[in-house]
Image 1 (cartoon, rainbow, N blue to C red):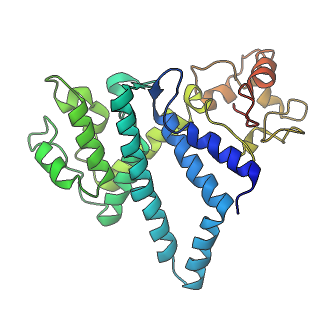
Image 2 (tube, one colour):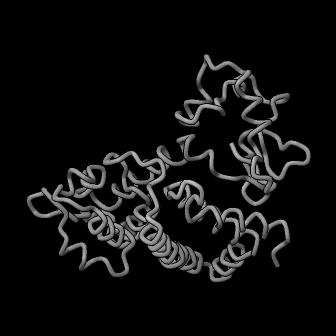
Image 3 (cartoon, rainbow, N blue to C red):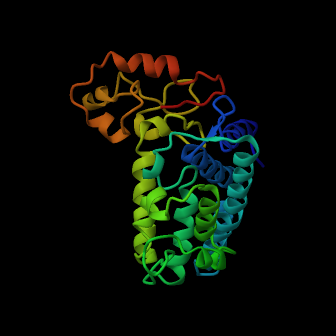
Amino acid sequence: ALQEDDVAELAAYLCRSFGDPGRLDYGTGHETAFVVFLKCFLHASGSSRMADDRATTNHSLAAAEAFGDDLALNVFGDYVEACRRCQTAYRLEPAGSRGVWALDDYQCLAFLFGSAQHAVEDDRAPAAFCTPDGRDLDRDSVRRERPGSLFFDGLAYLADAKTGNAPFREHSPVLFALSRKPWRAVNAAIFQYWDAEVLGTFVVARHLRFGRLFSADWLGPSMPGSAGAVLNRSSAPEEEENIVLAEPVCSLEDAREGPDVPTEVVPAAVEDDHDVEGDGLVRL
């Protein structure tokens, strides 16, 4: 059974999964929050442990793999569909979009899980979702492959959402660059994109919340009385003093390695901003 504190933490993650109610926008950070919710729910409910036990009992990973496939392709797929309805009904703006240089205005993990789905089927087959002349999206092929495919479903939604006469290579150059690569390479490239542009970008990662189920333990020891781990300046290594927690336009990696950042910037960000919503969770 879920503990009361776990329910509150899970609710916080789930409520952040469908967009920002103040800014009326939605983006990859909200999408990531839903994956955090799934991870924490499985951990708190013991479902992931039961799947591992079944796999061990059967001396096979088939049970655990089927369980993961169901989450990624069905549960997450239904979530994406619900988010798209919200985007249409409430005209949600893309949160932090990079314009044409974004993989997609709203989603990233849908393409990551979708490309993994095809890579498992045939990792050496080319994605081949553009026309033979390589100039535009092959809409007939996309519609044909859309049922049961998160990746092609994302392409179809993207094609319907983009208005105007601009060809696919102009309004979606990042996806276009992957159109002739094998599915394994497509999946690896999208994973690197998500790691750098979502998890590795402070302006996105700063909205994630951390508690008992999903702790920020890489920042240092837990502070007494906090729901999760935050930076303990008294015991942190000297190089941790250079973390730029108040600057939202740099990556976490760059922030940690920046040699000339004044350390007086850190206390305000940590002490004044780590629980501004009073939900018991901390943020970067």
